[in-house]
Image (cartoon, rainbow, N blue to C red; front, side, top):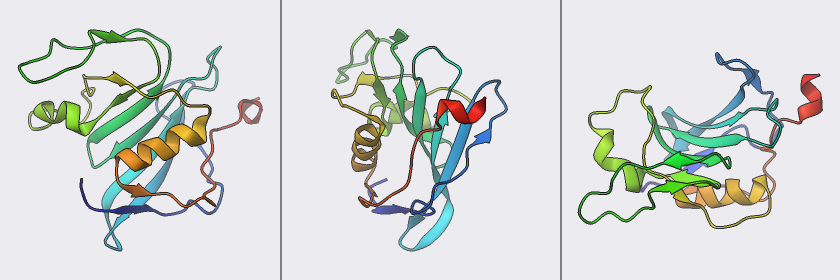
Length: 156
């Protein structure tokens, strides 16, 4: 996780693909580590049919190691163990970080959720959240990237 990472395909607008779930769209950006691809990616997942914006940024190692969720739904957290500090629930944009959840990673199946979430700092837009997530994940993100959320009108 500490290695510096780069995303590929970010200087062009990538097409979102319909996911297996209904009304969910996603796009993947492969990750280079020391100039090589090893199956890691950054995934943007969006739910464009929701009344208010709902989306996630996911670091896939695989499995998913960390995830930022832009939602205001109430998310309960498991009880903390000794030395852990996290709120009992979050109801704002939040981060499921590898650092907070690494105790769950050794026994976790790829489809299980990352349980512990903490609120993100307040930000203004998707690009701010993306830059913050990449910073937290040690992913280099140039200013001229073309990563963007799927526009709602494109679906209709």
